Picture 1 (cartoon, helix red, strand yellow):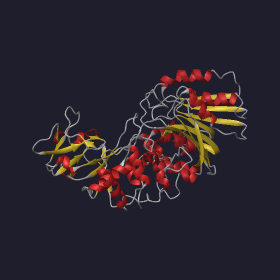
Picture 2: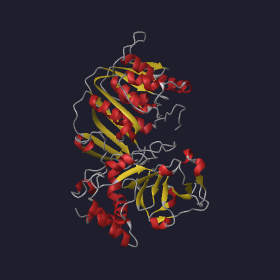
Picture 3: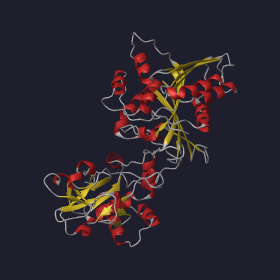
Picture 4: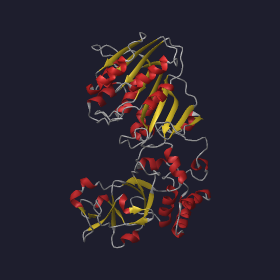
Length: 477
């Protein structure tokens, strides 16, 4: 696999064939297939191979393949030429901007020939952020689409171009399932189509293992204008579809009816998670009087105020690298980050009073098993300072930008480090990033229950994962 210049990851053959297999039979005698961002034609070929082998009842297939990267056109043309002997297949390779062409068609541009309505769409769209002031962003808004990445733009436009009961299958990053930036996109697609199938690659680096993809990928199948029913969920470890598992869930288990953000969960078993089963875990951070914020110190913006090692006028600056389990290593020698920030009138507003805080790293690596990794800031480690700096790659739990009671800080960290919390978090987050917004969405035990967990943690000399998970079973309301 190679990554094309415009953010395109080529689809491996086994994934392409699996995607083609997700389309359901229809009574249509002809098919209009849209392949937006066609690359070298792998997806169109997989679809046609299924048809040729008797997988569809169509008598004729017409393929529109959009590919703006001219360097890929020779390979795309060669892929298509292999089907020239089939007189019931027609092709149209479009070497133009799919977003522009789709928006012109949907908005009724009188100077451009409208695109047809498609019966099927199969796509592996480019993954690339869309700048807020870009031409693409402006064009999408003309079509009523508000989104932040090319992949979601391609899916939304492709869905809009489908006819009633048209089917869409796409492989895309899982990042659209949660977070505020993709809320308009989730609303757009779920208002127009029924979600029928989600396939999850449970490893973040195996679907596109030769590329730097730092998030899980999902394959979705949707039906335009369809009646929403149960959703099929399949999972596999990798692109070879090893250890394939299949489940069926009611739609309310995928999208909670009382969730205004329309987060999309991807349950990986029929059993409910310990968090979902517990009657004790039902409180929001607001209800227990706690706040969580992204670390306010953005180092490159305050570079002139940072010091490699602490000095007379500086205070500790904490990075994820200063935390290792229950241990804080500060200052660190031979650390590739500054250990301190000068305290002055320009930096004062970014600092927190020294105290107990629960912190969670914002990023995990592809190799790490856990998404949520929590720790505790102990003020005794910084007994000679009044203030602390938290770098932007940390999330900080606090009370009005002040420290927490000791037992509460340790209790929060203990709860967040349970296996059940991590598993529950994975149901709606497939990215390496853990944002403050995600942490606000989690349900927590009561303040007193957290403090009880904290007292246990403080007095436990070696809180292993087994012991931490056991505390959740013994949780008091």
